[in-house]
Image 1 (tube, rainbow, N blue to C red):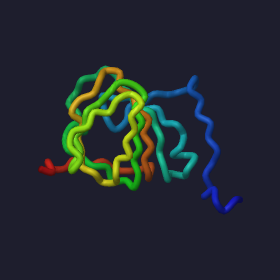
Image 2: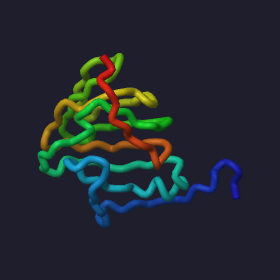
Image 3: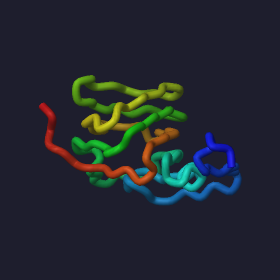
Length: 134
C-alpha cells in the first residue's frame, strides 16, 4: 500500500444511480457521494437540495457544526445565512464558502431550488443548537 493514500478507496459515484435520502434537515434531501466510505470516515461529501417541505427546522436556529473542515459550493438557487463575526451573507449559484470550524451560524432563508455540494471533515460531525451569539 502507498503510504500516502491513508487506506482510502477509489470511488466512482454514478449520477444515474443516485439515491436521495432524508438527512440532517427535513426540508432537504441528501445524496451521499461515497466519500465517507472512500475515506474511512475522514470526510463526507454530499449534494443537498431543497425538497419543497416547509417545516419548522432547528437549523434555522443558531447552531454550529463540530467539524474540522466545511466547504460549500452552491449548485443552484440561493440561501441567506448569518455568521457570527461575519454578518449576513447570501450565497448564490457558483458561490463557494469555506466555513471555518465551529463558526456559529443560522440560515435565514433559501430558494425553492437551492442545491449545494458540501464537503465536511470528519464525516461523523455533530450539529449543536446554541444560544444567539449577540
